[in-house]
Length: 259
Image (cartoon, rainbow, N blue to C red):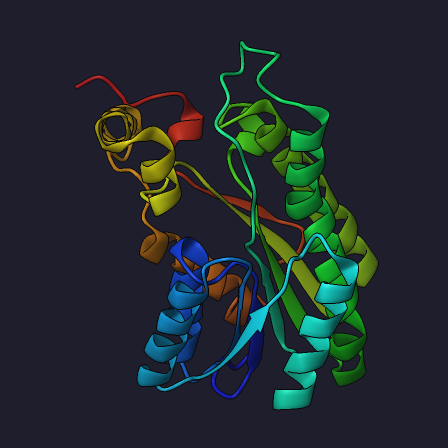
């Protein structure tokens, strides 16, 4: 796939990894739909950055857990740019809750987390597939997490939702071939505003430092670094579908080697 001139919807792209992916696509001449639900100022700033990098940007306020919003976002992309070449299902929801505290999560917490993290990617995929099928090709990248394999992470509901997303990636890769490739990128801990605000500055720094000390590659994740394999799966992985790529400094291997 040629990124230059292509059209890409990146959900949850006002900040963090979504914004990094949008900027990377724009720097290659891509036309990007920047989606947000609350962070309007940040979404506008990301759009300005994308345009300054040489791409085009369309802002779209939409909640991916709402099917009508998903269909509208796809329709707005086609109305503005005439096509949809790629979809990055990045929007995500979580709640920081100790896994040992089974009273920390309610049914409503599970419903909201699964609504955004699982149902949202399904609905967005359904919304863009007719356009991709019509043009004969397309690529979808789901942003999952190593939590979907390890059962760790910010909460049990979040880990369970990412496990479901990994399974759905396999199902969709089979169902949508040969025209559309579907893959997932599974980051480990990333240095993001969400973790900083959720933990507070002191706990956040300790959390990041501990991750960097124990991961085999001795580093915590960064949105700009994780954006690289996402873009590669869109543009360079012509024979890759149904894959879940872990980008976690090797943390899934079980700790750093002794020196």
